[in-house]
Image (cartoon, rainbow, N blue to C red; front, side):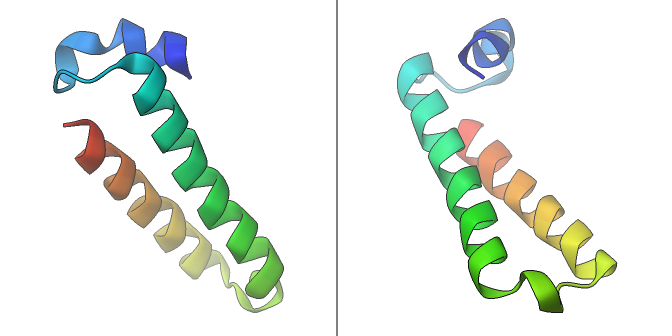
Amino acid sequence: MRAYLESRRNEMRKIDPGLATFICVSAIEAVAHNTVLNQAEMLSEKMARTLVDETTRMVVGYLR
């Protein structure tokens, strides 16, 4: 993840790549973990796509 972020440095705001990696990975992991623990059996395919889209928006918004 860090190597990817470093390769896209010119597309991001100025932020330490190590910190950005930690925050992004932690946020994605938290969403995935809570989804599996709390709602996995109730998650439709459409909701899963929406969850991925919204998580992506969150991470991209943080990086820009």
